Amino acid sequence: MTGFASVSHEDAGVQVSVTIKSVNHRFLDMQIKMPGALGALEARLKALVQRRLTRGRVEVMIGCEQVGETPREVTLNEGLLAQVHAVVELAREHGLVTGSLSASDLCRIPHVLEVRTTVERPSVSGETAGLVEGAMTEALDALVVMRETEGGFLATDLSIRVGTLLEFVGVVEGEAAQGQAALEGRLRERLAALPADLQLDPVAVAQEVVRFVARSDIHEEISRMRGHVEHWHQLAGGAEACGRKLDFLVQEMNREINTIGSKAEGLKATELVVAAKAELERVREQVQNVE
Image (cartoon, rainbow, N blue to C red):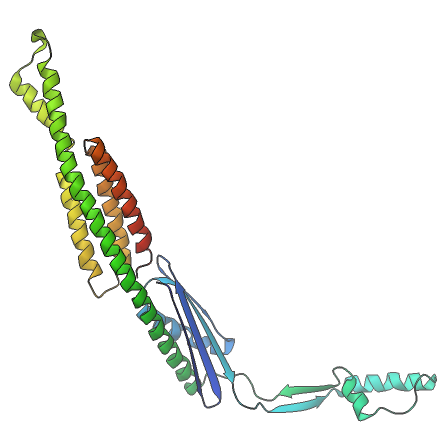
């Protein structure tokens, strides 16, 4: 979701600049900074962003100013000049100054002469609004291209990680099956070693052994995990934004792996579950970058 774009347009003596940058965020968090004179365009500009982006913290900075030579005017502060003149006359009466005020003296007195621009800040005319929206659209296009480029790299990385996760699950399935068989063998051996006076009904014992061993069966979790991975590839290969859905899917995968870890038999299976959880955590971190 990270990206940056900057566009500048100029027409009819007005220059508009639009800069957009985006970083990762769970939802769409938008902030637009622009001159107060363009405030009437805020709703339209937000709508432009919402049509193109669904996730990320997006900062938009818009500048608008007149270009070319700016007309200016010189103003005289007559009230301030009268006060200066009165003070100078008082000083002359006391013999402190001689002569009269010259033009150069007048220019050196602060705030007596002021140079001001005669052009107001750009208003939101139809031409200016179109210029701003055009620059905004072009900047969004460039931002989306950058985000799509990043998304391509993310898709490749995530596909590899999910594939690795599925490999872990396949190996865990095999190790857990061996662990179940070993557990059943140990139980039968211990029951067979009981004294004759403690021996129970063989059929009932066999049924209880099967029930006990079945508690460590993870076929349902493995099946759901593979279904989640298949769903992942469907979402990732689709045209719509899928970041939030993938984020939810990662939570479901994590739930299945936790269940597998609590049920699977065998030390090797436990080690593999830990490795799978570590890989899934890397997937979860990367999914936060997906729109």
